[in-house]
Each structure stands twice: as C-alpha cells, then as structure tokens.
Image (tube, rainbow, N blue to C red; front, side, top):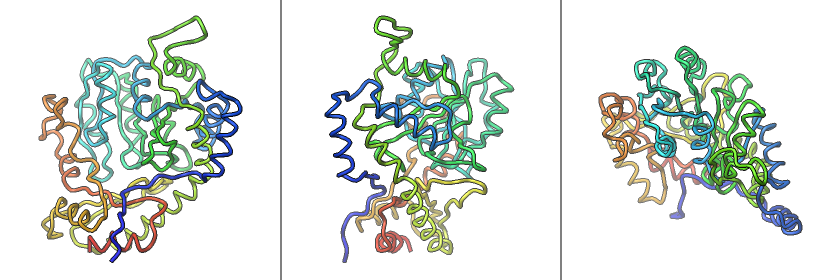
Length: 368
C-alpha cells in the first residue's frame, strides 16, 4: 500500500541548472536587490503575460494590499468578504481601517454584489473583493456600485494569476489588483507578490512607497516601507514564467479527472468552469452535505489525513470569527449565512501540476 504523503499543493520549481546559471550572473554583477536588471525584466515580462499596463513587484503578497490602501489613501470603512485568507482583512486593520463584512454568493464563493449597497455608510471609502479560488468576481456590478457612491475598488487577486474573462485579464478591474507569488500559488517566486495599476504615475508612487518613500537619494516623498523583491527571486520568477502555462494545463487535467469521478457522488458538489473564463485551476474545492454524503466534512478531512492525503478546509474558520473581528456588527453570523455554510462544508483537494494518476486515485479512494 502506497503511504507516501500527497500534499494539497506542490511548488512549481525552475530547472536547477538554469537557476544556477542565472545565479552566476547575479554573483558576477554583485547587484542582488534594489531594482536590478532581473527585477526590471520580470516586471516587463509579467505585465506582458498578464495583459496589464503596469505592475510592481513585492517581497510577498500581503504588502501589496497594505500599500494599495496607502497609495489610494483609503480610510474609514472598507466593504470586504469574510471568506478569504486572513491577509485580506489584516491589511485593512494594519492601516487603521474597519472591515465591513458582507455575505457571499454561494454559486461562486465571491462577495455578493446584492449585499454591498446595504453595507455602505458615510464612512465607507472602498470595496475590497476577492477572486476566491481564482473565480472572477462580478466586476461589472461591483464597479457600477463603486461609481454610484464614489468608492475605490481594490481586488485581492491572490488566487487569480492569469485568469481572463473573454480574453481580457481580470487584473485590470477596479483601481488596483494585488497578486501573491507564494510557494503555494500557481505561479510562485518562493515568496513574492505584485500590485497591478493603470498608469505610470501610480506605478511611480507605488515604487516609492515600497522603498521607504525614496524618490531619489535625498528626497523622501512619503512614509514608505521596505517591500522590494530581490534579484534571486526575480530570476526564479523569470524561469517559472516559462513553464507556468504547462503547469496550468496539467492542473486542468487533474480538475477534469476529479469532476468526472465525483459528478455522481451524492452529497458532494464542486464548481464547474465559468463560461468565457480562462481559469488557472489554483484550487479544487468540494463541498460536503453531511446528510446526503453520510459523513461530515471534518470526518472526511481526518479520514483523508489517515491515508496520508492532505486536503485543506480553505477557508475555515471565517475571518469574521477571529478574535480581532468577531465583535464587529458585520461579523454577526446571521449576516453571513452563506459564508458560514460554505466554510463549514469545504475541503480543497490536492491540486497541483505534479499529481499523477495514482495520486488522483488515492485521493478519490478516500472520498468514494
């Protein structure tokens, strides 16, 4: 019996010989950070690949969120979702902004546009939706609401690398979008992230803010932070960009096999691909109806663990239940019925480019 560990994800790794060759170039130049040539090259290549006008690289995926809020001078309250990774809301809190949670659309896991207007108050300055699991938000309706009330929109697109709707990148929606290049993501730079913006002036301001606020050697234009990406991770990212399409194609095949096998299992549901959307297959969440399935979500989760198959209850528990946020009026469970239901039923199955047929069979044998 195969007892090797099947992890929920596996990092996309560049060829070690290619990486070593590029490291030699860095060592020869002795320029290892501070907007070096590979950093500039990666920004240029990512902007082209992602079909966005301007992109600024960061050392992780949380700091672009924090910096976007600073750059747009967001204050007061921001409407957001409880169904996300905690970094989404923590970025607000670190900026002294109060998150206002609204419920999700159960058909996507994303913020429900129908719930946004009722949450707007005189203190609301922005909306921060999340493209959950890389599934696009209803960006048209969200923008209509934002325009109606004069609000900014910042998309947490940590899961949405390369996702497009009708051939257009979803990263161009709103005022800014942020990306994570963490090792667990479809595309990674070990740790890393980026901020997407629409114009050169905004990029210049973002680049100042991520470098202590320096505009030149003697001029500090704002109280910035240090969140630059170094040259080592930039070359790692350049090499991974060459193979990310094949990795996404492999992930798609895993999703197809999961869907074919699980489509007839009573009590298990999952998301299908959305029409007109180029997905990246970053996650494969399933949702357990305990009454129909005959087992609770947690029972299945621990059963998988016993067989060395790691799923993840992603996102459980809800951000709104954590100590920092649960006293907020918007965090009351009765306001977030769909989010609680999804959080209590979800397991993300192993999903990555390196899963073989035998791995997939072992995952499915735990479930069926």
